[in-house]
Length: 125
Image 1 (cartoon, one colour):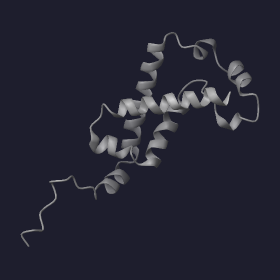
Image 2 (tube, rainbow, N blue to C red):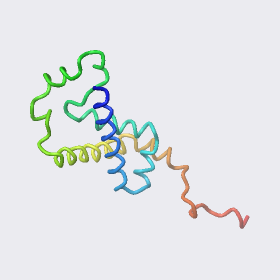
Image 3 (tube, rainbow, N blue to C red):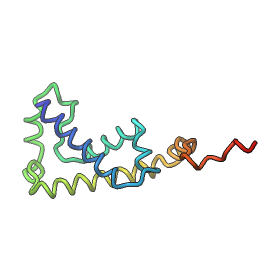
Image 4 (cartoon, rainbow, N blue to C red):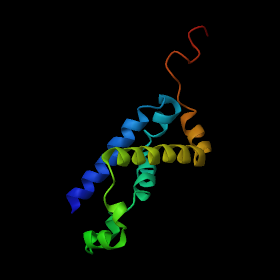
């Protein structure tokens, strides 16, 4: 069971990377290079996937809990494309929610970042 969970989590992480690649580097990709914010995005997405295995139930029989607590339409997505589109939509929602909730912290954290060629020259004294 642990292997299935890790593969599912890894597929979420890969999809987050793919979606972030469609955004500009500053501020989006740069923001989610911060490990805490990347993890928050991962948690945001995983917490909204129906019937996603939760490690808190690792000591119980997680497969039995998932099967009995989830409606049949949530256990099996209708198509891989629908599943992927749903996942991408959750990622976009998470990006915007985190950017909005943490905007002051992000602005403060990224304000010290200077792009090469944009810093005033000290050469002229």
